[in-house]
Image: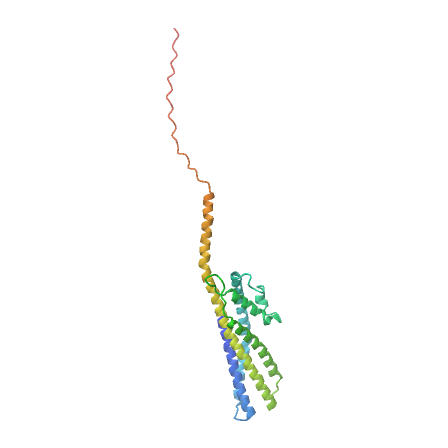
Length: 261
């Protein structure tokens, strides 16, 4: 639930940035074309909204990253139980893949993709079904695209000094590129919600199918272990019944000594 909530907040923040940038581009277009009066208070209002979103961006991104990695680590633990030998990377990469330069562009996707395939539902014969990975691919490529486009747009904005109309046009180009990056981030957040929901549901379904089988197997194992133990135990020999002591035979009376004649 925490992952869902934070991803939804990321999507909302990206949507606000898209709206602010689009309206900024419209206002700048009016300034360049001279087609209408533009009140600078409009720019001040947009700047206030943008500053508020930017202030929330870093803590929101950190919180989302921590919670998402915790969720993914648990998913990876479950996936190893479902398919021990179906993972290309060691479990430690569930965390390290996100912070290691260069490989961070594809290692996290490999970790999630392997968990996705390991958690796929089984058919009647126990074989894994092929499930669509469209949401998985959409999430990862839009996320990487948002990072790249956002970095380029930020560089363009910092390089612009709006002193003339030409510079304003360059500023508009950078804002449009920023709109594209924020839109990609919005799509990535929505796709991530779908991935989290689908992957969690697949593992819950596999657990629901495994629990009855595990209980039955445990019961059968207990019965099989109990039967040989009972057969191997020596038969108890009943204790002999108490036999009453035989009555002593009467002893012949000893003849009394007679005086000699």
